[in-house]
Image (cartoon, rainbow, N blue to C red; front, side, top):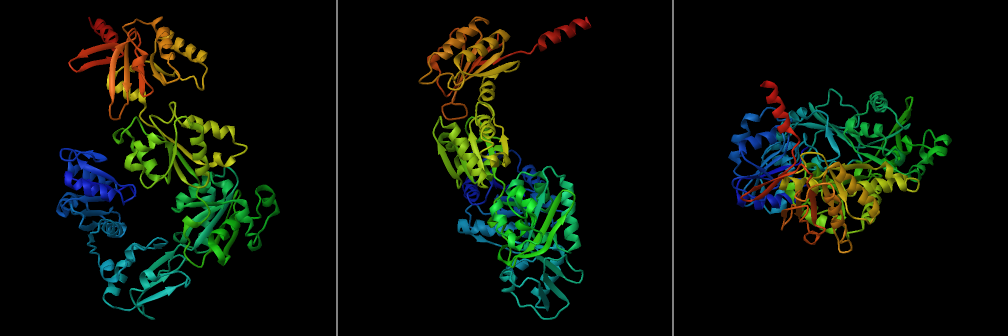
Length: 608
């Protein structure tokens, strides 16, 4: 499900919208541009925006009159089985009304918001209101075989008619619904709780998450082979895929594409154990293997993982089943299996470029990566720039200059199975943290092989050179390069050669790290090298504190460039010999032509 959108049509509604965003994970405030300032997302036309959100399956929480949502979304209504939650909230937060998608999360979300705001959730669906539960929207750990089948049984329960209960798993807690009603010993309708595939004669079948599916495979196994093995095995044993709580395996397989493809196919999480944890199940294995022990340190992967996940019951209902390159096994738990308490998830590390500053210049992908993270690591200033996005995250603050320590901490945390966001300003791959992360993984691969098994993504951000260029006009309109003037990691002689090559090639140059308290001469030397190859009136742009309070842009010339006007918060762009300055009432624009004028002239000449 997409992250919820909290709609504010007035400035008064925005305050309540922000309070809701604080308690609904991943939610963003959306404000009507002409009336609301400061929302995460601005929109111009309320009707178009609401219908667009609804049609893409985005949950909508409208801090507005319920009638606005009803009238706007009425033309979009089609199939209640797939509609997203739609909730109306009064501006004072006192009344929360789930309008649509009650059994797709709207009722639960409304109740959660009401509890947080001290308001009242007006849940109107009959099952929730009178029975206290909804068969077609069971809690976590349960799935219904056919949601449409719940309507008839719910109506019978509401009418006081006889409904039977058949429970194949008496150890599973069913109090969420059995404490609310009395079931009969006989009746034409029934509710069946089972891990087996639904029988046709049952009215409603609920599948509890009591199965642990252990898998193993050779490195590089085709995902279709593993999926086919599991599908056939479940079918042969008449086991319902809906009762599988999680896919489990050895941690050496945590980066195996086939395992994750299977988890995606079954829509369940994948969890992993180390060899010692699986070897603890050796006495309960049906097919222990000395060969497997010699290779990975435990006598069974699929069986051992399934047993470890299922807990104390040690009920291996499907021993190891093989295909050419894969194995699977199934264990049955006496109670629901909570995947969050099983093994470890594959650690995730997102190296996130958050742009130059404020939230308006962060990409949606960056926002999503931070929202999904359990831990945020970075230079303290960068984490502070995230503002509310970093709230309720475990912060790991580092000082400037502790780049390798930041990366190392991020890798260690991710290897523990956490979801980590390592944040840096600008773009993660431009003079930022992505490169040192991969360098550290390669350098220490023999000592820390688990780092190479992490799920690592690099999330691009708006770079300082892009922002500076946009503020100035279009100075990067033709060939350009970026050079860091910091000689902490690169000898100054090499930097000089790069500046000289850029000058000879007549590239527009973006200088990062132009000066510091220790380095005060490098920018002047770079300027003098450039002056040997391009005119003194080449435009120079000094962009400072981009995207933050106190942002400034100064346009000068190469000859007049004074390093005293530059600090570490400044990006310096130096135009090529072709770059042009256009003065206007508010300052100056700078652009670098690509030669379209000459092309147009040649074209006109051909016509004459």
